[in-house]
Image (cartoon, rainbow, N blue to C red; front, side):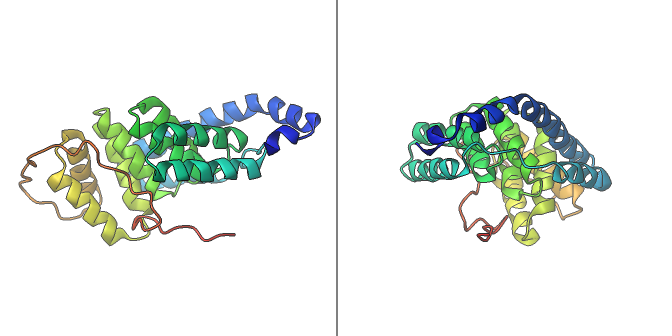
Length: 234
């Protein structure tokens, strides 16, 4: 593959930069967690301050961006074939080759979530959000991860940021209301209700529980996602 033909000195420089990148990644995850906590507390200024901290960070260096993009495309193709294991391997390699590849990190989190690997899903989505803290779809996926772990506070914060950064607030409100009224999982339903109240949106006095759980609720990651239109090519 292309990355194997890179000069040895370039690979050595990239390997030497890994400890610094790991340290920055941990601090970035702290900022993402702060965005969640501040959002759950309805602290608008705090959320924006943490967002600015993340946006000031330089993008991590890539060992081979072309090869990373090729693996990203391979992972997307595997997802279309419903081959989660192949997709996982491809996205992992893409992130290793280019830690600044937002799409690879975002889809890596999606696959980890599908496979029930909550810790890994959280870390991958945090990485995506550290690169683009206004990415509403990643916040929505992260809310599901917390919901599946029965963490209502962090699910609420992530849903609040989903609404905050949605480019179509009316559609985002509709999605929140649908979760609040139809989701069987108490954590997600309560988080959606709390988010609606935080945003001072109308909330029904009585929410009837659904008849069956929606354990396979998929995050919206297709280009048609109303939460965030696809980014135009540079």
